Image 1 (cartoon, one colour):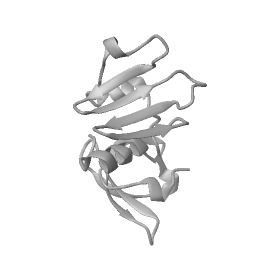
Image 2 (tube, rainbow, N blue to C red):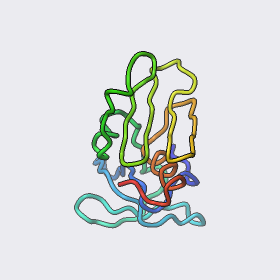
Image 3 (cartoon, rainbow, N blue to C red):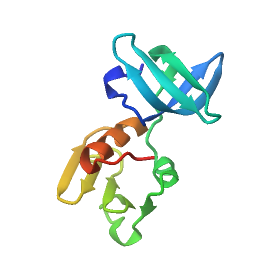
Amino acid sequence: MINLHHLKSGDTVITSYGGVEREGTILEVDHEEKKVLVSTENENEFWYDLDNLKSIPLTPETLLRLQFHVEDAQSGNGKGTLYVRGPFSVRWYPAGHDPLLVLHFRDEFRQLKHDITLNELQNHYHGMTNYHLE
């Protein structure tokens, strides 16, 4: 189940209702009621219980969809794959490497030892840049 404290406005999640799953953007988080207001692709806004939300696993394809590009000159040969979007980069190492991911923005580095989800990357990105990753 998704952790309520990992969810922030602007994060991208999967909603599930009546067996239909849709990607949507979080508009508001109600910590008291433990519900999340999500706008889906057809701009419908609904409140969802945590049981009806799923995180999106972070994959290389997700990074490319978010307008990151691969820096071939700085990838490979044991250096992992470097994905860049402006001054922000994600270095993704093969499974078993420690750390698995290194997030870099200007002079700040964050080393992550485990896989993360899209909304967790969005929260790291916001924390490091003060901008939301869409």
